[in-house]
Length: 348
Image (cartoon, one colour):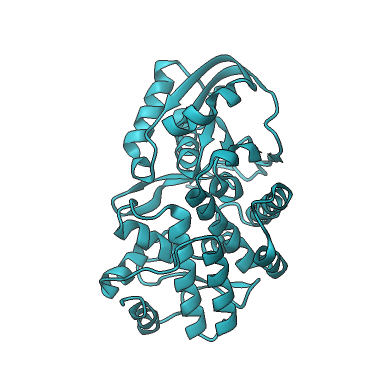
């Protein structure tokens, strides 16, 4: 006997990304802002001046990638239960990528899913992490291995928040912008080579282009079954670097920048890039003070960690590599010896 559960239907997860000064936000339901002490100290008053809700609560979690774990999720969810949040309630992610990922994940699991919106405060989260509905936490096996796709109801990108962003964190965000240009848009890359991101109008233009690129990719492949995986250029290597350094040495964007350099070396070895293209990408990263070097201490251990990547399987490792600048290829057909040969170049 076969009983068919007919669940085939179109689900509209569309939402708007507003790139402008934060508008007045009014909600006739319970709302919790999830943030960290650093962001709250700098910007919480600005948000509260533009926010009204039936009931409003502030939930703070410690700042840093090392706190992006189940302990923090439990703390968020328990506060929601304490204040009797229900399925009509709303979470607001107010911070960088770590806050966005954790808030989205908490929203995805609380009472099997409630609404949330993103108000990203770092460049990296504005151009990448807040867009697309990827949520999750880290564990001892690696980064973002526990999570869910849970789209926000809206994203509000206010360049005002970047005024207090330390230069190092700003540069980490630029790495994600470069990633999108290398993989999808040669003209955008050429523009970035000449652009002065300290100019407000230029920065706003770059924000818009990066967000449009990410939004287009997500609209084609919401749950990363194909094209969206290309946005992980630099991440396959970068996640290993983050894990090896216990998430304490590099910001996420910095590790991705180094990961792009490693991916480019592999693409060069395969004949998919030339020396000039590799040099241009490295030069653009270095222009924004993004790290481009890393010393591998154990090639075999570094290689084995690739298998913990979400895109890989038990027997194959999936790499995202540029084909020149403006094109990208996703492949799991690169032999171990070739990859390890490239990694050997980072031993000294």
